[in-house]
Amino acid sequence: MAGSAVWLSAQVRDEEAAAADRRAALAAASAHAVNLLSLNYQSADASIQKILATSTGTAFAEYSAGAPKLKETTIANKVVQTGAVKAAGVVSMGEGTAKVLVVADSHINWVGSGTPDQDRYFRWSMDLAKVKGVWLVSKAEQVL
Image (tube, rainbow, N blue to C red):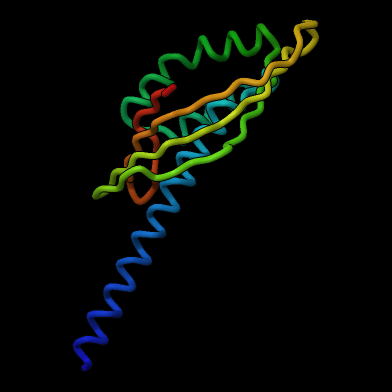
């Protein structure tokens, strides 16, 4: 009887830990999507740093390489873009890895340009890796 209680208690702890990991991966992918879609020409460096802070591996390398052009374009066009996650779900979890689908929208304003604001819609498949206990996006691919 005592053995069953110990086994059951361990099972519950494992399931709670797995659920917490799923929530953390989901939150990380959602935050990354918002960071990708939230740019402000008045704080372009900070906007880009948020993208890099939620990235690792290939994604980090790609965003780092594109950061100077992104900053230049954001400032030159006086972009104020705000992102919002509409839905997200964990597709799979492995040992220190996860795949998350994210649906997010952005509202874009080009300050002073006379161009009408635009709403854009994005869908991503994101691969995440747990690095030193933190979930980071290692790959983000737009899907149709």
